[in-house]
Image 1 (tube, helix red, strand yellow):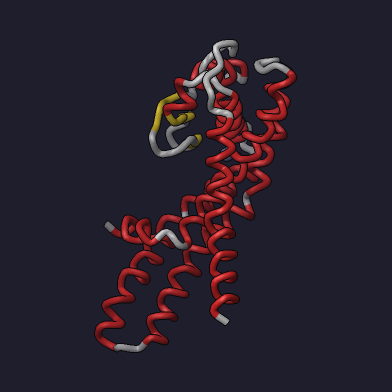
Image 2 (image 1 turned 90 degrees about the vertical axis):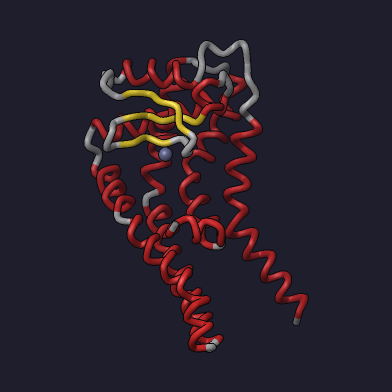
Length: 228
Ligand SMILES: [Zn+2]
């Protein structure tokens, strides 16, 4: 029995943290600076935005993860992708610009996703409160069943985030393969030999939010950060 429990535990950990590790590995693998590339991620983002007639959308550096902010209309890239001349920088920049294009065109799937994601904040806070309260409730009531129930409820609430990001994956795949990939192919920003690597990065970029949401499920440190 302990062996089955250990295997089940390992499978669970692989399911929860595996996608995040994979996304990070793919991005790191192709983050090597390449002097032969025509520009940095930030320069490419600016160029692609201008080409799409989106001069009003800014490009900024961030340490909160690469994303497009529809409220401020800003494409934000992390330092390695903002300053870097790598396949990861090029592909991620093209992916985030594609979100700005989805937004500018008023694509319904993008708008729906934005509405859904903006509602996730309070669900996360509720989950945080439930999880944080559980040790105190246990100290008072001393019921392991209630403790397990509270933790299960908190994790289930965090699971809503996974479901939302899974349901909105088509928006991510459209950004990567419906828009960014054809733009990279047409513009010949990368050599043909680099395209398979670019495709891997675009795939990882599309799965980023699902992977992050999965990892949140068992990220105890983050549970505490949600509240404080
Ligand atoms: Zn995206």
